[in-house]
Length: 111
Image (cartoon, rainbow, N blue to C red; front, side, top):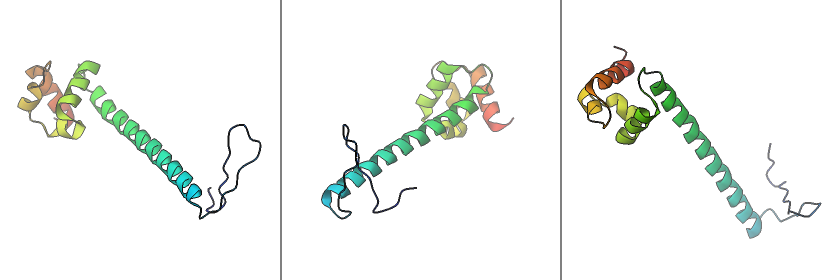
């Protein structure tokens, strides 16, 4: 793991690391850049995993293809909102007939 105060900075084209004082403003800036890059990557990864979970649950519903899943998610904003929707709300989504809305509703409510 990372050990505070023992940071190594490598510059492209150089064979050895550069040393900066742990309390220097340059070191603080580099640490903030590193931390922000890590935060960005972790957030993107979490969103990607969450999105995969949402899609997998909708993919289990017979007759619901990629387009209908996308239309439902765009209309409601997420799986939680789709689950909260009434049968009538589901049928209001463009491309979702009442019969399909009932299949979706029943699949998400265990009926």
